[in-house]
Image (tube, rainbow, N blue to C red; front, side):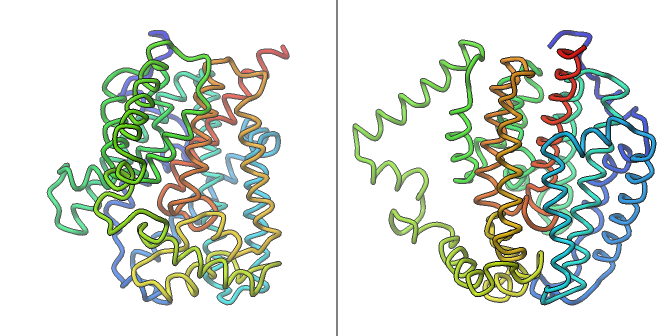
Length: 399
């Protein structure tokens, strides 16, 4: 990626624009504004919740001010798949009219809108300053490190775990794993690779491993040594399956520590998914209201579980089949953009694999499709990055 296309850690913080500084502030904000109420008490507004509401309002206001003067931002949210995510969020807003909890749906939809606009505004400012996809990618990966470091701080403060212990680091998979292919397939230096790849691989997350497996299908046109690594991994897995048997292999990998092999021996998602589908079919067209379905159906039946752990089921529960169609179309358009003829071959491979990873993560973890939580920030950053890099090369080719 060239010496002139690298971003120093110092310059990572020396940026421009209030939206970008606000995005930088957010991980620190989360680390120190910890949840003070019980997970099952969904109606209480504590200091933490009130602070997040204020932050969302401020993020929305500064992003809207930026929208007035930033042409790149306007193009980003109207000429890329980001607009389909925006349409989905607008439909989430409309669901307040039939929501079982008006206030909850209104706030969670507003929160989605605020953070989407904040991320888009920040990347538009960064692009206008540097005009370099490589520097944007470095900025994204440094931000991932920031999310990981502040995430470990938050968990240490909340649970009393040692700072930067194995326990706290491995729990940061949602801030690291979505960036796995971005850092693995691009020449961004071993410092970034060692942190993000290590946490992703040793996260003991089946969802992350499935993301890596299916994401590798998008790899083409990358360096020969990267291909060799994946071939060796595939050959090793095949050997163990043939030498032992599939059941033994699965019992010692995906279903390690479980009583058997099968969907019923997973982390309990089978019961959550079954409940979400059954309840969703009672209001299939419009759902129960964005985020309200997750809260009053899933969280009410499963103690200490936030949502359906599946963005598509969360979308279905909250906004019905109409909202789900918009959400699915958003992913289709994003994947199509990642394979665009305007993108160089090396970016097509990285972006295609990253979108597949985000898709798998959305199927198995909290993230896109519901409240801003889990992998929502990481996944949205990746999609906005892909969109703005696409705009960069499209402009170059057409000029």
